[in-house]
Length: 256
Figure 1 (cartoon, rainbow, N blue to C red):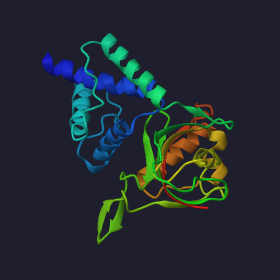
Figure 2: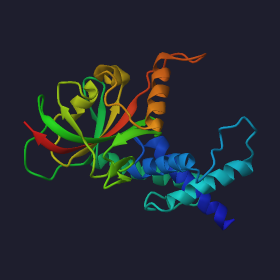
Figure 3: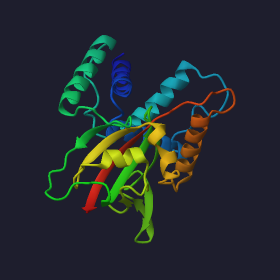
Figure 4: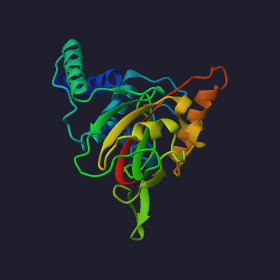
């Protein structure tokens, strides 16, 4: 019974974070990415690839595997609660406190963003025409990882072997040239070096405004962007859906 209560609290606290927050936290998104990567690497077997009925035992076993992977990450996101109501209340209190510290900023083009880490360095701010060095991570609105550059979620060849791209890869963006979606350009304005923001990007100012740049280079990323395109235009019996994407962006350098 103790093991079940622990598993329930861990799982529920993650669900609350995904259901009530503006977007999944970096830790939550890393957990989701690790689980997906583990499936690709054969560490855990996919549960939903076949059409066989799924039992409660199957769901419990799969959840245990994913939660086991999550233990390599900090446990600060785990709520200390003993029942559904107390977990919900604790989650709501944390979200309310977080929103007071980091309010959601709403732009005229429908873009919403939050400052995850402010800039503490002196120097220029991003403006129209700025040349900037940028790293980014893109997810669906539900928190499913799509692809990234420079956040450490992908691998690059360095020193003759494949390594995490954290600190090794970035993207050069000229604000106003639509190297990234128009909505991301709007959210970049005013950022300083070292600042990180989380951006909710509506499709009207999304990928189509930058000719689907930046493009993914991994198989998983290519699959994710193709699925996103189908969702926008509709497929089969599914009507078109204006799905948003969520971007974490960080400015590494600015030249005005």
